[in-house]
Image (cartoon, helix red, strand yellow):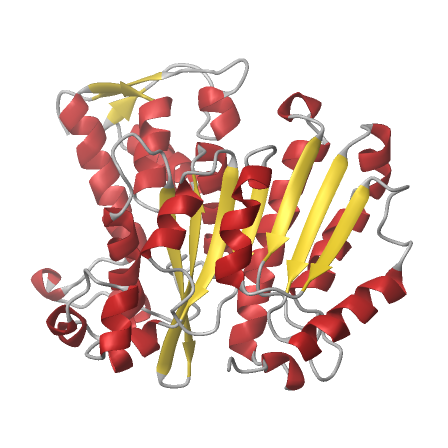
Length: 370
């Protein structure tokens, strides 16, 4: 039986996880509500919704979803949009509490019938494959807040990344992978992760190992990009994995992740010891660069190696490296000031600037010296 975190008070790690989810939802929803050319419908799927709030009534993911929808309720009506919200909880008691909570808030979230919330009490492994044909009909945001590791197995992940126009976040206990890697049950869920590999990885790097495992499963031709956010709770490491097949989804998540932690954009703790690395000593050869400094060095080499490139290529490089567009802009402006590169005109590193309806492609040339 899964642990009922809703019977307790959300701790700081759980609140960070929920804040990241709500923050992405806040960025995701207006893309469809405010830009009608994306279509007239969208769906939000919360497959492990819990009872909706914790023991002190702090909002869980279902209430956070409704909060963000309420912020755009008038525009949803104006645009004649249709928003479907599916809240599933496998435990009967929690599902009943969730249903009562949502019904008690009606009609505040309905937007004149244009927002439809469904509360379900089903096993995820049975429900998810049955919903896939429906998920193919509109853009989706999927939240899989599983307890432990077993639900988002190889088959679920492969089917998830095949659904078009779908962004997702799923939660996974990387510490559980370290703990149970040698068991037969674990090998059934993750057949291609060897116990030896797990044992060789530090606890702080466990979530990165899991991320790379899922990345290797993405087939050629599939545009899904994955990004991690590790969460430390005492001695254990948990984490979110975000996935999107669209550059704009990647951009919005990376902006949010680096806003959550400006030190590394990847964890709720100093996963790379960047605080120590930022303090430079007298002996240069002993100094280690921070994650931000590594990116800037790599970006400079990328531009100088290409000799001539453009902001679109720099944008793609930045997304691949897991950094926000602001880091690219600040680095490129510094390199021009240092006369290491040059470009003419206004330059932008957002998806809109590089790939929008009227992209502004700016050539960037490396200096022949310096």
